[in-house]
Length: 171
Image (cartoon, rainbow, N blue to C red; front, side):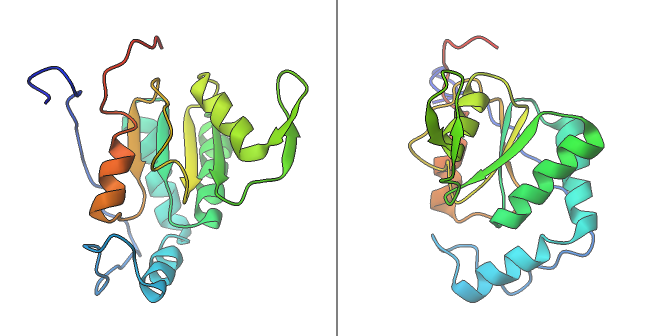
């Protein structure tokens, strides 16, 4: 499909993270067990790992980028580091952000919808998310997808679909 021009070429790289051990977790399933999910979430609360990921995102990742995180806390922490330490436009969202905020037109909308709309308009460099945006989202300006924690094959394929299709959007 890449040769036919239907999909864009994909580049991948990994970042070894200090203090993060995920041995014994089966990532070949569509969904992690509750125990394995808890181990992943705990591993990615590591402050050093968060800073390592943020540095790589700022230095190497084409923007705007969707970042898939291990938990709501992980998404919020990474977005905070990206904003405060690196001065980039980063926000977090998740499946639980249903509190209401005012959008550009003065309408009350759910926070996650407002955050996604701002990302789609190009107002954010990074959107850190948990348990959201794998499917059913079109964000054609998205240049990169970052997995800050391992994904099952099905979720991985769905998530990279956010950026592998050619589109006519302008940056």
